[in-house]
Structures are given as C-alpha cells and as structure tokens.
Length: 283
Image (tube, rainbow, N blue to C red):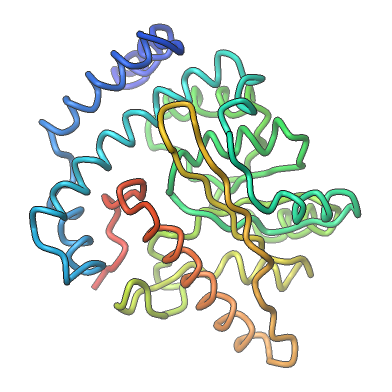
C-alpha cells in the first residue's frame, strides 16, 4: 500500500456519523485551507467565471470549496460503511418522476452531471433507488487508491466504465436500459467542442451528446447540493433537446452547448460546491 492509500484507509476506519464526522471534516477542512492546493488555479477560474465579484468574495468561495470537499469525503466514507442510509440523507428530491418513467419503460439515458455537490453520494443514492446506474470514471494514478475507490463504489452499488474505453460498450448498455452517468464539466481536450462556458470559450466534452446520439437515448441533467452535513437535495432536469433534423455534427454541437448551459446553471446556484481546482479553461 502507498502512503496515500494508508491515509485514506485510516480515515475511512475513523469516521462515522456524529462527532467523529464533524471532527474529521473540521480538521481536514482546516488542513486543506492551510495547504491551499491549486489555489492559483481556483482563483483564476473564479476570476473568469465571476469577473464582477471582488477578490474577497472569490477567496471566500475557494475556502468554502475546500471545506465542502472535506465534508464530501467524510460523507462518502460514512456511506461506504452503511450504504442503506443514503436515502435518508436526501431530504428533497425534485423531478424523480423523469427517472421513474424511463426505468419503468426499460429505457436508458445519459445522466449529465458535474463535480458539483457530493457527486459520489449522488451515485450511491441512484444505486440505492434501484436505477441501473453506471458511471464513466478516470482511475487515480495511485493504483492502491484506485483499487480502494473501486471497492468503495462496488460496495455502494455503483458500476463503472473506464474513461479510456467506453463509447461502444456504454451505448450498447444504454440501449438496453442502463443509465450512463458522465461528469462533463471538465476540459474536453482536442476531441471537445469549443463553446462558451461561464462567458468564456472552452473545450467541452462531447461524450454525453455522442453517446446520446449513438444509443438513441435522452440526456438527463441531474445535480445534488448539500444543505447541511448529511442533508442533501436533488434536482432532476427535463431531457435536453435533440435537434434530429440536423446532421450529426450539428446535433452534437447543439446538445453540447445546451449541456454546458445547464452545467452553468447548476454551478451558479451553489458556486462553493463546485470543483474550482481543475483547469477548465485551457489556453
């Protein structure tokens, strides 16, 4: 085991709902604020997204983001120990009839979300509700940590695809009724489509639109937010538009642009709960 995996395992063994969770989240949050990982990137991103806000506001959002990430890890460790409790942590769910209708009819979907709220907890909730959820993930470089995370996700009922090899397999499963979750709020690289995001052009991942087109299933945006520790809300949006009269390139660009707009909407509601530490706008 590596040092990182030992630390994660020790943390996992310690936390549980109650005083231990509060102590662990407060201690980790303070430590992360002191270390301030990728602070420069976070501030640069906030300046791009909210040029009208002053620096004090941006620094406060980044500080709250650090504490949010600490709580997200604590909540997830608690979930892995007892997956069945997750439903009681989501106290307000809007739009679940959309998922229920698809599931009842045996229809698949592409679940569009981002690194917003506690996305791992959200996946656990979907699995606990009996939805056929599969997530597209990128494994950490640390193999020991990657192995632990894979075990954790299996424990909470989440099945995963490797990000490097998903298209045909994921499309086939979606056609058979699976829900394929993609976190599409990071840089799309050379394969992405250049569209506006928070007022500035960026490369957006084309994966959700391409999978939707290939599998013939809708894109359903979905997000959760923490109201307070172990109390979350979920919003499930109506399916994104699909301009079927357009050619493939036109459809993908239209749907990717709309996906970006929905992700913007999700982030602006609770900006402190988004992962500002990724280089979203690459030159």
